[in-house]
Amino acid sequence: LAERDGAAAPFFFSEMNDSTTIRRNPNMALAPGEDGYLVYDIKAQKLHRLNATASLIVELCGQDRRKDQLAADVGSLVGTDGAMACLSWLNRGLKEGILIDAAEARARTPTSALEFASFAQTLREEGYVLGAFVCQYHATLQLPSEADEWYALGELAHIVGRREDARHAYEQYISLEPGDAEIEQILIALRDGTPPSRAPDRCIQQLYARFSEFYEENMCRDLGYQAPQVLSAALNSELRCKKNLEMLELGCGTGLAAMHLRPAAGTLTGIDLSPEMIAHAQKKGLYDALEVAEITLWLEKAEPSGFDVIVACDTLIYFGDLSQVLLPAARVLREHGMIGFTVERDISRGFHLTDSGRYSHSSDHIRDAALTTGLVVKNISSAILRYEYGEEVVGLVVVLQKPAK
Amino acid sequence: MSDNRKKKLENMMDQVEHSRRGFLQKLLVGSAVALAIPASELLAEDAQDEYTDEAKGKGKAKAKAAKAKAKAKAKGKGTEK
Image 1 (cartoon, rainbow over the protein chains, first blue to last red):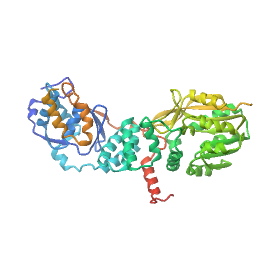
Image 2: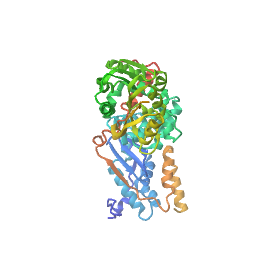
Image 3: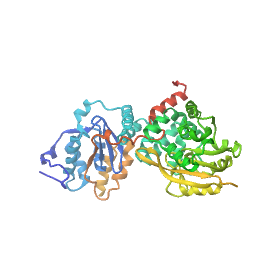
Image 4: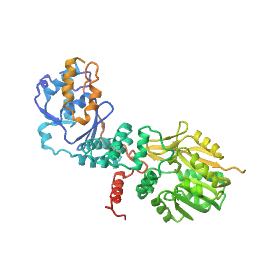
């Protein structure tokens, strides 16, 4: 018996002359991991992490290999007792189905790239994102001219925290599908480029044209969206039961916040850049007026001092410097009027474009922007706004007031 | 790593699938003395129970399906309900 470092399974020396021919499992997807491959066996639904040497062996087994010869060849690069260590791992690889008998491999129908891509989508929908990433990676490299595969790979790479892979995948996607404003915005972040002052209008319009159909299901059911509730609670504590207020909601979307705002509103006006989202809001029947417009342009054209309350629930996440919205908003607020909004919290100073294509903001920036625009900070507090990829999205809930002259 | 071993490894690398060669080269060719003993670990037996919420992001639910639909619509191939 030979054993190495207590880790390898014991085996007989006679195995060093094992002429069995082996091959890589043809139903297995491969993707680079941290220090070797991640491999996903779609038949067994098992995910393995391989170190670099095991990855090399798996690559070499892309064709028929004699087990003893392979152990000797790779083992000679491993050092003392390398052949035995390699043989031991080959046995393990065979036991776990990473490698199989060559005859069996030939008898199996290899999984096609499209099947791997389809399986990746299934795994993703089931929430198994790392396996999905491995299958999608494997599929995409075999389908390099398919824009949708690069897009799916970019998303999965982002979800599993593979930033470089996400950037590369989106760059491939955008080269095949130029003009996708959402991905252009995300790529600015992934390339650590200089962010624009705000997300381009066509980026937001494109996003919500697609998103509007499943917005409420996604936000409320999947992501535990709480921003409308926490923002209206913060506003109500400042408004102290005032009623019959002239209210304006910037980026009203499908109208999720309206049911919380309506009880204190005399009139409620909703503005949104997306006609698809406005159409959903219209159906709720909670707004007195709804308009499709870009909010800063709308504010600049609006009558001054027309509103008691302005609300922007998860809307300012598409703006960098908040002064560009707060300044025209302050103009249309009445004296003692309030503006309440939520943003995604940035724990450093200032604001940043995140890899999601949205901006995060620090409380320091909000205080600076309030000072610049002549508003008084009434409340800045942290709250969980929703969840994303299983993690809490912590936001800042802000209420600012326009002082009397 | 000796020149002989380096050459042997390079010959093996020539057999690695082209799209993954660069990645493995980075890991293996820089090895100072010898390659590590091959090793692997099984990451998840039944992953479906473990990562339920990790795929859910803002605007990302059913993203591929929704994207395909939007694309078809943009090309005039789809009709809305």
